[in-house]
Image 1 (cartoon, rainbow, N blue to C red):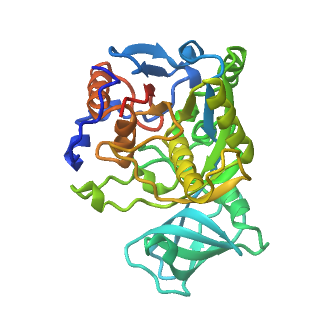
Image 2 (cartoon, one colour):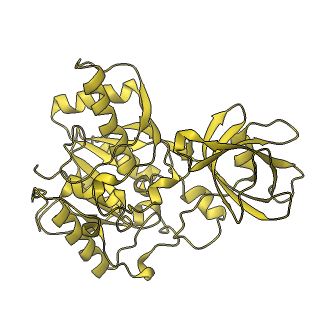
Image 3 (tube, rainbow, N blue to C red):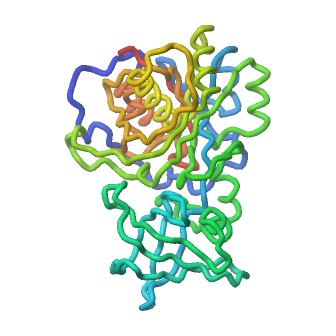
Length: 372
């Protein structure tokens, strides 16, 4: 089982990324300590079981870790229609002007102009409401546009922080609590806008970051606001027919310089999570398209629908730290593109046999870029 096994020249189908996962391996709560989770080292021919805090010994001085510093917003709101029917909103985007774009779960969709009465946080008397404006065309009609307001005129991010619920993934079965407010958030989150955590970064704590600094491993950050589409399975057997969801990202000028410096000194760019991969590789392609200059430019931001499947040519990322992903998901395809399909599927079989914990609150793996 070699990570250097190339992705064969073949047409991959959806079933190539499927696997059977015992439900007992889906982590419902985080490990007691962030860096105490397990780490499957998949960089060699034989998988090695490690603890996440071992990471500094697996990297080199001069390597560059790239984190996603997005901050998960308390994006889930509950309420009712004027008729009394229950409704749930998952805020995907804050649009400005007190407007938001949201997924809406309801038995019968209300008409445009309808105002929903939303539940406020316990002990508050805030009258929170959402007025439906219509569908948000930027998301191909999958999202609805609302005006989110209260009597005091607070902005949507303030209202969500006060009244919203942590948007735990659908496979986590408990309601959100105090633990989730801290543990479904990275220790360095700073730019609010995500409705799902960049989960590979959840394993880092202050002690581990200090140990990486001492080992001469450098770090920088991008921002990609993770959308709910990250949990959606690919449904078309022909992968070329799949339409990726759109996510906003930014690569700061300081990060562009850090990457250039890392490459110049022969260090490796280590993406912390698939969201960092998506941001870096999207930026690299846009940079090649609009500016061929070697020198880093100003901060770059854009929307991305990048779909990374086996055969993809990576321009920036050389190593990846990632959690274990859902079967038939675009993220399974991404990690297979980076480390080789056969190698990744063998690692997943090993992880299941060794009772690794899966998905957002689960364990992690370290992968290296395979030969093309």
